[in-house]
Image (tube, rainbow, N blue to C red; front, side, top):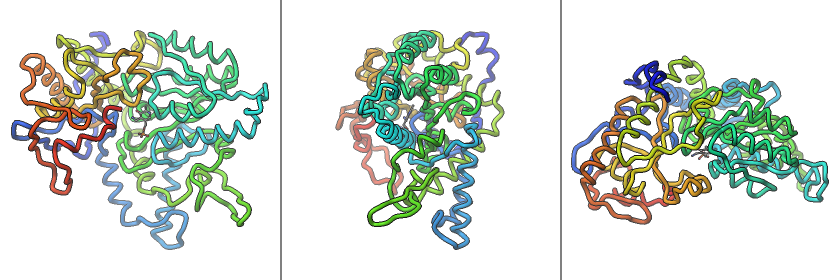
Length: 470
Ligand code: PMP
């Protein structure tokens, strides 16, 4: 980002919106507490306060959805079905698009993959019918959620180039070669935060007879999405990254493939009629939403969508871009820090730029050790590892992973400053405590920081879950 652009951005010295946990106190390994600097929004974002209040508002009415004649049940059903409409508006869905509530983005993309599998069977793809498009094309920068479901189907991958322009050319070459049914791309990289030109990619896919699904897990919390305007066929995202951490995700898109797919969760609610020997499956969202739906997850996701839609676009943009610019500039000034990016034209390519994610490494220090140090000695939370994007991290020459700082509407300049100060102190003074690797994670030795009494994990072993290196 140029200095001229930086000058135009107002300092984000206060959160744009209040979020729950804003003043959380984090214990330090050397004693005392500091305000927790949450720079891990891209993994899971805190609840917007208005979203959490809405949860409390809905909770007294919590009852079964679609299954009861009682008053609370009717209110819950209305809340759930209205959430579908709000989400449809949030993504600018077409009138005949289907909105399906799922658990998260991973679930949504697996659901779509199941539909594609059914479609290929129905169209006789396995029998080698030559006129049937059957492959899924994806980039090598994808999160595993937008990669593993497609690997179980006929597929092809494209290695992203060092510019967006050349990446598009590579995608076009693959599309021109024919046979692509679906282009699966991320809206924004969860590793570097760089945004892909999804409208252009949609037009490209359509030009060659393919459809497009956008993994908007990272894009939706930062940018407006419009299926109608961009032509995107399917979009998937998660409530927990959209400031609604209550267990719901969504898949929105064209109904024909969704209605042709084998039900994602066979069970109650997904059927019109069941005999012992035969089933008539429901159409529409019900087909894939078997079992009791997550009404609170859907209601809060919809509330978050409403709150984000009401944000002034310039304020939102300024807030995140100012934080990003300061973080990138501050880290770049530290000798021994490398900030990673994918595309040399990310800032100049139309409709691209970057969301609130900054990826970096510190020379001489394991990423996991830096993350443990920032948490223990500075009360700063970042993510380290390979970000569920192994092909990309390996290609970038970072097989041991890197660090990711991410932020959003509840973040403020002080969070960025605390991270920069922590890294400066590390390179100037070294570690202030001893750390060991325990079950694959770096942890401080003799970690005596206490958790709330209702969270019984013993400090120092709770981080042992190997997923953080994913
Ligand atoms: N895609 C991207 C780009 C992501 O960042 C993530 C989460 N890290 C996912 C998909 C998966 O999301 P979830 O864990 O909510 O299913």
